Image 1 (cartoon, rainbow, N blue to C red):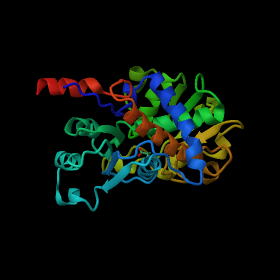
Image 2 (cartoon, rainbow, N blue to C red):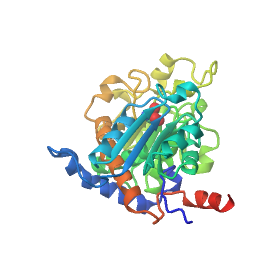
Image 3 (cartoon, helix red, strand yellow):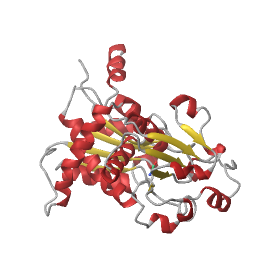
Image 4 (cartoon, helix red, strand yellow):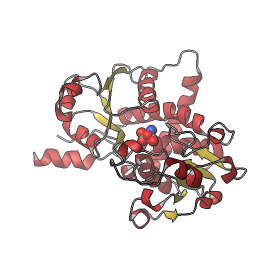
Length: 323
Ligand code: ASP
């Protein structure tokens, strides 16, 4: 049987037409989230499972709200407090949840490829809400939405992605999606935090001078991701030194630049508190965009079955053929 499911696993699988469609759908949902009664019946009778094996505030809250705004039935499972605590494997957890016949599974997991496995082990459409340092595609979509809303365009916008690229799934998704939409990407940071070979693999520019952020229209600041750093490995001499050399402060910005951060922020480390709270900051807009963009992703997956696009369809088809 042909598998007609569509997934959102990585920005590398997505086409510019998919992105355009999702951003347009998201804009249409702005009206819904502003209403007194913030609900449309679009996904009534459908079930969305949110399965989070890693901490999350913005992504888990917005996926849950997004599904509820679309009138889906939503089950949110956090690894802590679930049978994962008792040692249940990812595969067993997925097959348990699959028994409830969810239409969509949204998964965040520390292991690279966990979302892909979920697509293989379940019958649901799968959305990757972050797999280790690999991908976080909905973050990229909401960032594109935010940039276009503020700057009025995507093509030719210069973005400096600053900081801990090495451990960042946001950077990996954003590099792919930003380049696809014609943005010009430069990575700015200490060499120890820039993945070796990334310039060759993706065509981005790399700047080892913090002053390089001066050329950008958008300064995209990444969190120092301590939880992904190997114990005992010192990527930077000290946080204080990192902050003084690479921290994005008001002094380093020029008028007209905007600043983004996926959150959560380490205020005073990668971003100065006054910058985060300034009128140049789009951080609040990113959070708002997260809701309508995730509504658009859930809607798109459920309403365009079998069309391809935001999907890694061949994998599963090939696998079924082989089985
Ligand atoms: N919230 C984003 C993520 O889950 C960024 C971060 O944690 O620094 O990847």
